[in-house]
Length: 328
Ligand code: NDP
Image (cartoon, rainbow, N blue to C red):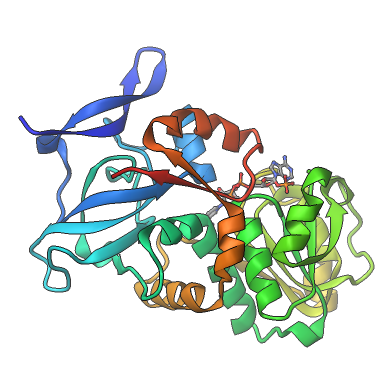
């Protein structure tokens, strides 16, 4: 029997339980590429999976971890050969397919993206699913035709993973960024990333009016609920908000007023099933447009054996920026 170290979630009488374990290689799922995982990350969804706070995991046993970077060990896929450096985000990793918190992963080669030139595996995971989602949001705003001269961009959940990378990207692209945070003490960090103005998230988190003063042309929202509704009511004529998260809630207590009276658009962002062509574009843009010094400031690195503790911290909103996990 050949085993490797992993976090394993099993179903128990009392619910589900995550623990470090020696995982039997024969239990790996089908796939045409085997990868030696070197790095993973802790995303909000990983927190939900490990703490079992939400039914993210839909197969047992499961190895959680929705993303990884590593080196191809074996491949029968014509696009990959041993030694290639690759990354993987989503496609059900850590939800329906054994995930990234393991020394080894077996996956479909069609899910992989080659590590972009100029990025190390650790940097790619510092970006991780949260950063790649922030890039997808910026790309969606650009596709909508929005440019920095139209007015400021607002980023909610600013001190979190998606928020931190969104601020760094938008400011590098010349946008004036308004950062909404519940952590006033993180104002210096958010300004270093490029935020021009900081607002308290309490301004946006309660029930609002159908229309408010026009304040921003664009937005990246990782919070949902009343916050997203209020973002829409304060978006300038013809502007758009890219919605990618639910840190406040999954509901959207909004009216149609911003859509039918101001031509505002709500752009949905999904990273999990996102087509490969858009993924590659996002990763290329991240390699080009994300300031590496800012990425360093956003990132904290932890050893593999700290992941389970960190999962609780991210759900409690205590993590600033991004967490890289050293696996290999
Ligand atoms: P983080 O935990 O790193 O960031 C979330 C941030 O949201 C927190 O740091 C906090 O920011 C803010 N926040 C937390 N709780 C509340 C609350 N009750 N009300 C208002 N704001 C709150 O998570 P990520 O950045 O990794 O992910 C953010 C969201 O995006 C999650 O919901 C996640 O599931 C989603 N997501 C979706 C993806 C997709 O494909 N659509 C992909 C990746 C993430 P602050 O302290 O600054 O206020």
